[in-house]
Image (tube, rainbow, N blue to C red):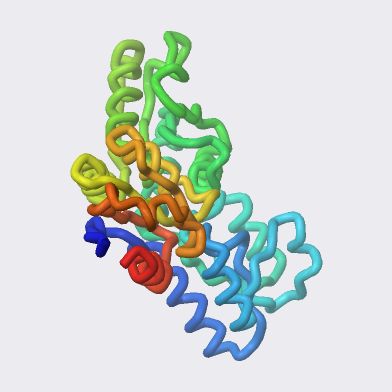
Length: 281
């Protein structure tokens, strides 16, 4: 039976990721030499392998000492702390900053309000590189709240609140409602990326209307994981895959599954989405 495939709006590369990938490829073409990215440029193994074929390799912070002055290092869209940025420059490395402009804006706001005496609260995952980078613009002093349970009466009475760009809107609201109970002076910036918000809302609505939902993206992608968490609540036939080969046979051959919804994380390229669509059809 032919299946009906519906692809959610804003699926695939977001503005910041596409900008970073385009920037690093252009940089390699202009320099004509190996380019290093500080950590995997995006959370997608196929894209990382694609970049390696073009002499663009990820390098971790603890490996920087093996680089030479004038080597080119690209800061990925997640951004880095002020301390790491200064270290790269002191080493004499050529730094190409591909930090997503939305993330860069959060960093500047955190730095500004920290210097004005506000305690910083970041709504997000403390282990995510974007959050770690943002925290590095307030001397790593921020309280990182995964959800409202991380907020208590012990928080500061004067706070500036920001969010990881890929956070869920509902979680942001829950944390903010808890902060309001304890703090007297609150400056709050809802810094969830608009594309993320649209993507999540569309995935939520789509998952209510289909027989199966496929979420495409890297296993370690925070925004893809959130899409899966949203969809599984509405559609029990929701799966998270990285590529077309991982689609289970039971979904492909099940005649009760006619309408299949697809959404994809911000690090998922178009060619992977197309491969998934073609395999289902």
